[in-house]
Image 1: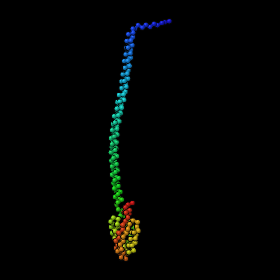
Image 2 (image 1 turned 180 degrees about the horizontal axis):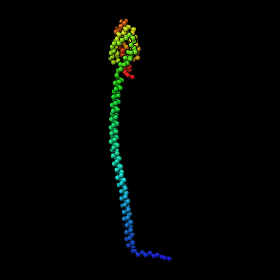
Image 3 (image 1 turned 30 degrees about the vertical axis):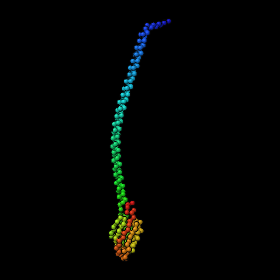
Image 4 (image 1 turned 90 degrees about the vertical axis):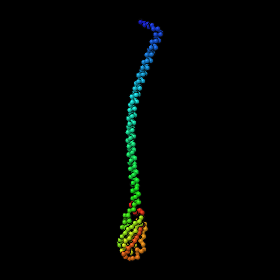
Length: 188
């Protein structure tokens, strides 16, 4: 059998000095490793910062472009709204004018429907809704039929045939006035 004998020839001070050196080296090695890790982490973080900063600036530029485009679109929308307001105001004004405008075609349609044979109209004057007619009737009966037809028409509010027109039997010159209803003088 072989026996091994280990001799410890190092004195205790040298042993503790060697241990201190080993610990110091180990500490320096750990500090160096920690420093390398810190440099690596800072490099990665710096790269991430540069990339994110570039993206942020790109987004800000795009946002500024979008704000400008949005502002332009907003201005166009405001212009269109102003145009629509103007057109609507003009259409409203035209509608009020059209509604308030008197169309005398209703008068002529009434006269066409009620003037009997033997009546000839010479003048037609208007004052508001009142229509004043002058003309000639061949007979008193045709003049009375004309007055009755006017009074019976749906568009005539009232008709006035003076008695002085009825003194003669034939070839009567007459004056007559009647009032038209409001709705018959406006377009439907």
